[in-house]
Length: 349
Image 1: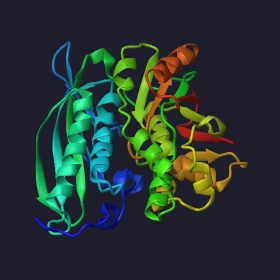
Image 2: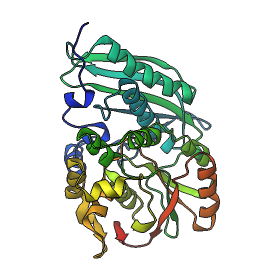
Image 3: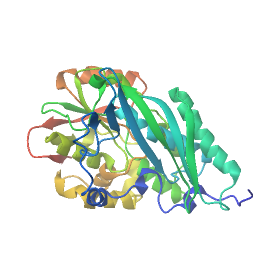
Image 4: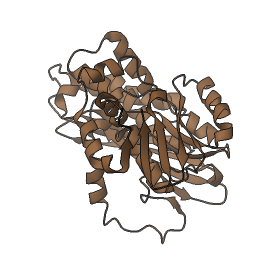
């Protein structure tokens, strides 16, 4: 197929996890979702907006299943494939699982993108799966108006290793494993103001597999885990607060950001998704009066292939943080705590 060379991001109305439906819209759509309670082996369904479904196969094995796909967040085909695959695999790691195979999900606008570009996307995704030690065992493709790529991923874990987003406990410390700012970097990239070094920084964080989730799931002091993606830190923290019926307190000054994220946010390079996120869940978030608006945008910034938000026993937090950092996540930080109280998120300046 012959097609002109075009920027992948120019073919999509949004990019990465920023193209997800707003949280408020998703809640409305799922309001009449059939109850899964009759399925006793379904340990995790859609009730708490968790990262993946978990089915208890027997006393020793659970199946972890997820799907994730999106439109391009970068223009390089191979990088797009790598980022999308890393993001999809993250859901299994966040549940405490280990991926065993994946299926590709592909939608491409025929006549607008060459077969060479599509091959690059698929090769990028396959390379990440190879890094994770799993095959891409098949998939499905369609002719679509915008480029779409992602994976359906199947994983396994022991029942006691399942880590939900709904089991944070009062007194826990909160650890975030990656720096924030991917959405802001993506917005700057589309406007042509992201430097080469900043682009490399964005690709490095979005292609860093969240394998650590599967490793710390055997630690009884780790109580709850979720990955921070399209709804931003505050949105996924709000889901944790609602599911656990706890108050989540975030110390914004302790959160790590990509090197130029604060500068770019202050210059106005924020996404529409960030504003939609705030409109969806802002009522359940209390902001310190001294928090500048640009920092709020960073905390609601949609993260494509973001890090894990980990709720763990406070007395073990330093040890667990060191384990995470030593495993290759240097931006990991203790960013807050879990308290008793109304299910809400409090953000301190």
